[in-house]
Image 1 (cartoon, rainbow, N blue to C red):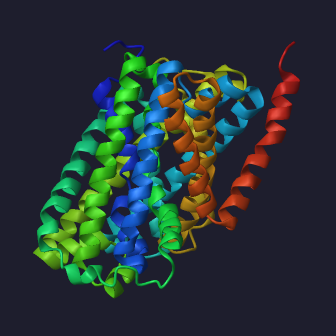
Image 2: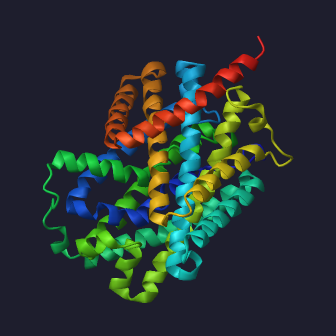
Image 3: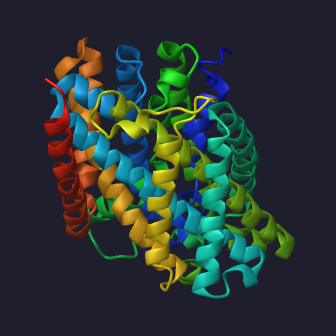
Length: 424
């Protein structure tokens, strides 16, 4: 493995799996409980859409194996202004996701050590402590962040697969009836659950963002993207489906740690604590991965003079210090500004911002292959990925779309200022 490209195939795959499996796999069963077994429709559509997007990103990464991921694809296909909008939107989604996962980590630690999150201030300090520990790991270098990512991915993927595979034997099929307890039409339920399940699978494009630091990126990134998406998607759906079949709907809706509660109901208190520890490791690993991405994206944009130049400066270890520090400060501000709320409220608010800001890069990346890609099969895949992204975007809801529009618009004065300062 070369020093200039310190991430190999396993680290790249771990970045995808680790970024996707974070808090969502452990918390979503409670959010999906009101929809009963009908939530499987949402999972099916989301996994199919995620695979289509993964295949599209695989094609794009072979065509443009450069650091920046969705930003690079938007800029190369549509020009500088669309490139800036996607870079800005995706960067916002990253540090909002970082805040959400840090809060989820605090919640998982609170399930093990209740005193850590006994007050909103303590919970916020716990979240911020985890965030800045991951920032320190990333400041040590991309190679070190990759090693931590690989370790935490193994530590959280194995318990998730084991829990999902074993717990299925204890599923009570009565918990899956009625199939659709909402009384809404199945298409309406599918649309609503797609908006929820999407959060659990965000990050499928993670390996495309630091492509310049990945060994043999033209081959490694596509393989890591498709393999990682399939592995994380199957593991997440398996575990979440098992939880829905283990706990009564009324209990599940009120649960703060549904997977840990399901393990506790099956095998006793020690199992519940074990799953809470797995969730803590899961959140920490995802946090580490998203902090890595939060620096790589502005690095790529700054090199093209689309973001301020200080984001492109590297230290002696080749680390983009400014990107890590600024992104972590913004995530910290989001947590601190909402510390008086409950963990669930801060988590929900951060998810709202992150998901809204992520879907626009998904839409534009799919469109980029339609415009600049080659081959009919590849374009069909990209067209289906685009349809899915628009479908999910409409399902997010008006409030999230308004927030997304406001945040994107807030970056336009920065783009105008940078263009004014650009020579020539």
